[in-house]
Image (cartoon, rainbow, N blue to C red; front, side, top):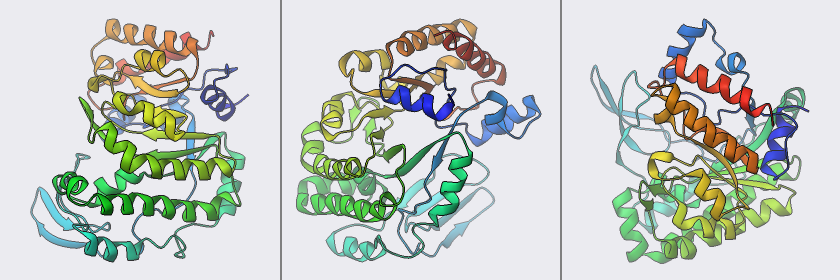
Length: 352
């Protein structure tokens, strides 16, 4: 039994035959450079024996993309309007997050203009599926269909402080945008799901800070849940069994709503934000969990790594748990530490 079958067994609450080694969000570019020097290889996935999630080719972004316009540039930074219509300042030569300055949606009028780029039937959004099906047919990979979710749509294209006020000042527009996003994905993905059934559907939301969700559970229920349910009911009607929610930060206060919406798994369980996977497992036994390995502890030493491995063993024994770092592996984790962690994890979990 291969990687794909074992991952799906875990996500379905069944006992895998073999441990499927996974690093779901992989490595920062700086980490790749660091580890490649140590391993003398250009293929870290192969070096560590990592499995693969293969994404169905589908463009859910504004289409056609906005024309990029460079507004200012010096030796260190470049300020531009990017292909999503967002004005941002980017530090050259790093993978640091850009500094976002301005966004394309400000009110109903600018949303209606922006929505002209959200035609789900635009040619070019979906690549020829036959090469993809041929590719995944030859590879032992999990087949994944992904997009930003309805909250991420709001957060990605509206300046955050304006968005928070909009929930109060123009709730009708908020609900219009989230439900339109659901309809957009249903029409876009319907063109795929009539011809191909992925193993998982993945919605990226990133809707929480360290101490809780960016909007209250009541607001999630009012403005986001209807769109989630519409999307999830649709993909499940097309035969998709597994739907993953991705959100950084502490989402424990909205997990009851996440379960109600029909999500079957969550990630990355960011530990610095208080997302302890053992607590989540106890409170939400029906959810499959991906992530939850504390990258800050892996950076320290073998004693701390062994404590993480003990936790991983307890979670893995209970089922519905796929160990992975609680986000991309940062360069603060030395190659020696990561290699020890990953080698020991494979040794321990292969004994189950």
